[in-house]
Length: 327
Image 1 (cartoon, rainbow, N blue to C red):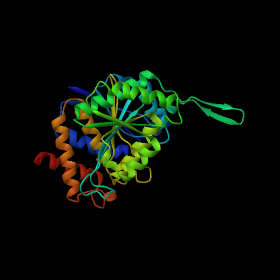
Image 2: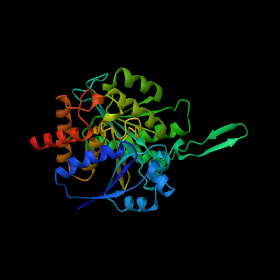
Image 3: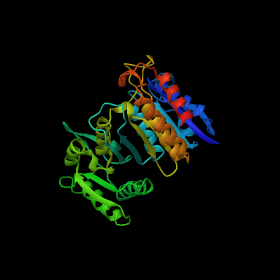
Image 4: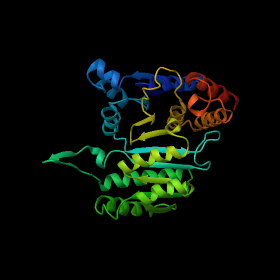
């Protein structure tokens, strides 16, 4: 029995998580679901957005399925990444038939280092100026680059591309680039690199040249949202935060307070995040079945309003569950 800690969080997190669990529970998986609190509402109730009890439950879990948080995101998600050492953020971007987007042939994955860079939060006031310290370590570079190549090897992908700015940030990005090619020597997988600005240009103009992208924390945060835009937006963008021991799976769309409690939120990103969780836990065949069901349902036009349909959040989940049973 796998222990899954469920954190709905705020806003539409309280809608997309129940919709996703409707599918998982309908497939009779050997999971025990343990609910925990975090986020803005949690802060209002307890004076902390991430209670110690929630953190301890996460440390005792086999996986964490997370919904969304609002203004306290940095105090919740960033802290969980640091506390649980979830050093790898994995963001797939894949075209789905029936979704209006810039391209119909995108299939790439961004692997983002999750614990270093400017997001360490080392910022200082110096007179009338503000200074931020960028931290890039050899250990951090080695493990994220190795993760990217191991992912490419496991998923039978052909190329890993590093994005950096080593021509300007000669020390930090220079270290990242050197380590990238040092690690690449151990794999029979094509390795190449682009400066981050050129890489963004190529992502918009010819995204099919990319397979697996690996980059540092801030660049990865930006690029992964860009790639989501290529395939239809954040409502379709799943993610995984993975470490040596722990793993957290979440959509990346935020709490969307403007549509919360209206029952119209698109749960696709959360469902696909759950599929990433299933693969992580060794249930790859079930993950593939759910992904195919999502694609089939969307292709048939059975969607939430953001994709032009008229289904509510739970109705979409029910259609996906029905499609799973038919596959």
